[in-house]
Length: 316
Image: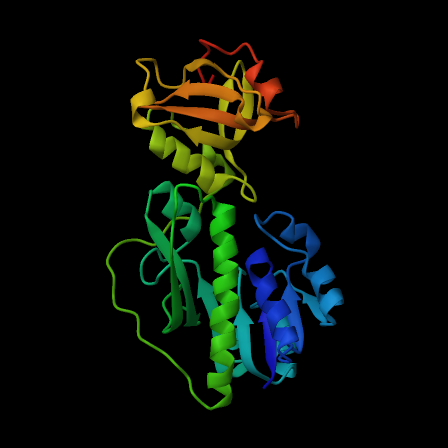
């Protein structure tokens, strides 16, 4: 069976490694040029990966342009895997694989169709999410479902830990699918209709922290946007700071303070426990790692030693 791979996100790396180890190496890998990949959160170096795995790698900025479609046709494909890509394939590109094009979406479709489903699931405080393998069509996330994996969202998860589970699910579902395809099967379950708009695309400017929300919502927002995403941010003393890590204090640790006011330093002999406590609409979070626009990173005692008590985070 002749396979090809299209992707640029780290969520595809374990699957490519597993396909090669299973003797089902793709005949080609298509990925973004480096300058475009650098602008994508969570991107991986597929050039280096291809060299390590012995796979030919081609670069394309547009999977639907004439040159790329011609390349795909020339590969004489049975199946095209499109994992962690971000562009909708149009009819000519979809038609280059005899059996079809297979994609993945990091939710339990049809729930959370659209952009950034992992980030939105965390922001919304959802208790679980998952990953869906599906046959691609020109309708965004609307194709028939091949397989699904569900997993919980714990209070300790971030977008990075959830994408690790997405990557493992991609690998497991594709390895389950391949023997079925070789037997001539084409598993597919039609998605039920679901009301509501698609999840909107998130941009770096959408990361502003709203301290007027309850502490659990602020905590969820920070962990939803942390590395490898651009991060949640706020301003203090005229400087913009990205908040990479925070701690949620118990409900009883609320303070009758203006939302965004720094309550004071949190100190400990353990550097990882040091930080700054900040009031929310209800409850309190502790900032554990922040980074200024000039690249200055504060964590541990250098963060807890800042004379920020009484100062207010916001849009100054």
